[in-house]
Amino acid sequence: MMKDVYVITGASETLAIALAKRIGQKGTLLLADSCGKCLEQAKAQLLQEGILDVYTETADLASEGAAHLAEKTAELGQLRGLVHAAGLSNANHSKRQMADHVIGMSRMLDAFLPLADETTSAIMVSSMTAYMVPQNGQYMDVLKQQLAGKLEETLNQFTQGDAGAASSMAKLAVQLIVEDQAWAWGQKGARLNSVSPGMMDTADAYEDIQTMLEHTPLRRTAEPEEIASAIEFLLSDAASYITGIDLRIDGGTIANYPRMKAAMSQKKMKRF
Image 1 (tube, helix red, strand yellow):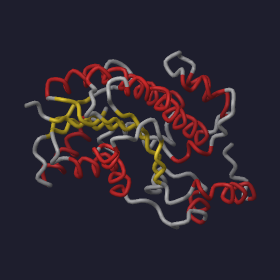
Image 2 (image 1 turned 180 degrees about the vertical axis):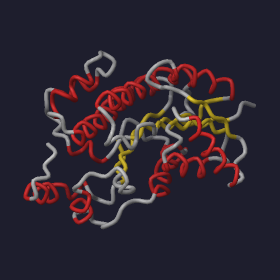
Image 3 (image 1 turned 90 degrees about the horizontal axis):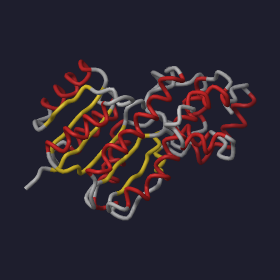
Image 4 (image 1 turned 120 degrees about the horizontal axis):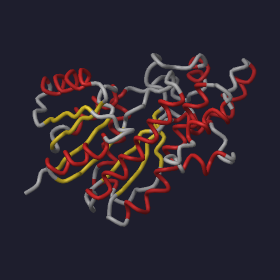
């Protein structure tokens, strides 16, 4: 009998580690990251938790890394879960890096689709900031065509040099691609969703984080374990009829966004 394999990218992210701890006893873990040292540290943490069936792969997902990772997965067993968290904390990255993260996600979906079956669930990590982007702009179709070489140009054109706005637009691209690709995954009986975490910490936060918190109904940031538990649900059979959606896990921030946007405008913190 083949082992169930769970693939998690972005293993240096606290969310990825929290998720690995939750699902590590359910099958074989394959952790991927561009940082080899980060992978060693993540694996060490899991070993301390008694999670022993762990493999790591250093990969550049924007190039050939996705294909190699899929090959490694097939060697280990049957793809049960795929969680793409690489590039989660990208607010301080360049637009080229942001574009590469989206391209890497698309290549992951292409590489892993042949491995998917009716037991497979794939989760792409977006962000609540995607909901701050007006979804009627000229950029909507371009964001779906992420491999056409125009994504970085689109980010530059429509965000006027604002790194925060570019990050939000890149996260919107994640959601649009998931919606677009859910059909192809469904033809294999597999499920494909995205999740949009809210504020988990302040390390890479925008200057207006205090305003966001003041207008978040739960008035606090999320613990990584709270995001991980929602992803665990989407990976499970309990979510067997959920596909093509984005699940916001943001403490209600976006639900209250109109009020927050007005407050941010008064403080001249407008992003879009």
